[in-house]
Length: 547
Image (cartoon, rainbow, N blue to C red):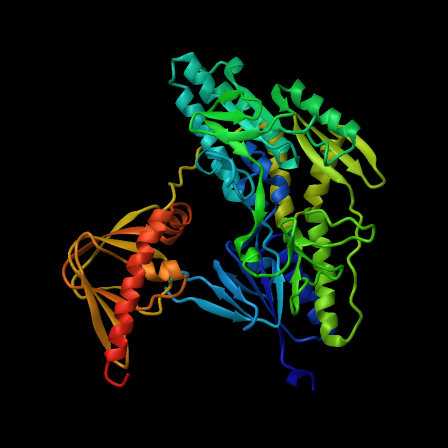
């Protein structure tokens, strides 16, 4: 009987276009064909963001929430886990999820693993870029850029030194692909339109510069004719194009170009480079050009029922080229992938992915765009802009999302912009914590998320060697704890409890890892202490009763 057939467990990593639509098509196909599937999706957020409209979020042409689709509403039969991915064990076939509000980690077992994690922003290799550049890849990035730009305008409104004001009003974008040109165009429109509300800011002090190492923007993405049009259109609307050079370094006050020039600025937005998601790199499967090597069915080379979809998969096409990392391809890959997963349980033949694309679109600001339609038909100007908006609007998931965006667009044509800064606070950073005597700081088995330094008070460390916990050491002001689990990337191996009123400096695990990965002396110092403590614990365990 069909009910006796165990459900195949499919775990999808990532909630972008590839991952969300893979889960959606799996839901529909499983229901239509009566194939029992248990579908789980893991994502850092509980929403799907419509990335082609992120530049419009920067400009305020659409609301922040208008580009979002709640995954729970889109995927009604999928188990959603809003967690960080700690790692994947391909031998045990489990995905390890990080802790949430509770300190316990979670493991998801899978029969099929769908990797749809895309790429991540990677500023390594360019001096100063991690510290001083604003990435443009996620919704959080778009909101951060918008808030930063508004803050710059607010600060400039009271600056009397013209040289300082010009530096602050210089906005530099690195990267002349679709993301770079669209955010530069949106930024140019937004800054100049919004600056009218600031009487003390002369419009001639505003400078938007786009850095690109090619001869013209979009020359890799579009035909030469459209690339030339895009370059000319951006220049006509006041965007300074610095072509044939690349960004080589950044500081708090300038962007340094490959030809030696320095651009004084407080705003540097970088759309390049990117690298594979660390979870993808840690799989140990073949990676080529930063993407998992796949066959035409999207099965990952060297993996057992491991699949890749979207930006992180290097998927061959019938003509010999590889599939480009675009949303239109990811959505269609997802459907073929879902059919192939079901085919593996019904003895149906596997399908190869073959999709030539429906064209390319790019917005240029000032109600202009460029479009390359199927068959290579070029369209540019206001007509291409209407096509850009109409096509992307039609791709928005759900009628309510379409209605919200349509209202935003119509109101934007007749109503002034709202340059409201959303001051949501900074990152968590180092914080202080207080514990009363007898309170537990963390327990054995909890997730390792922080390093603790004792500012005042005393703490005892307890460890189980048999059945009852034993005190293995007592720590006082100036000492620290929690480093062993962070260095080993495993759950806490002991319990810590306050003996007296206790004040701690808490360093988040992400900050600790960043320091340990970049400062060898910092890491080696902690590793020496961790080894000494581990040896002491081992000796104590050997001498414990029943050992």
